[in-house]
Length: 108
Image (tube, rainbow, N blue to C red):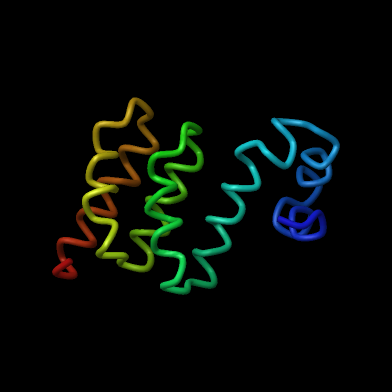
């Protein structure tokens, strides 16, 4: 991810990340911001990446992945997001439960 894109997506915190905060460019924040961008500009080519994000170690990435899956009814990610309903983090479980409910209602 380019430095300019990190600043656009992360604002002032993006600048801090570029300075090495929170793991820098290799940390979880750029992944959270990239996933959040998919909420607003979805492309099915991102299906595998957003599904893989449900397994990421940082809970904020898993939560955002579940939100994207729900928002865009990514049926191919149903099994992955369903597994997050037992995540140790409540916010991830809540986002996953919502995603499963929406995907099931959509017939995924």
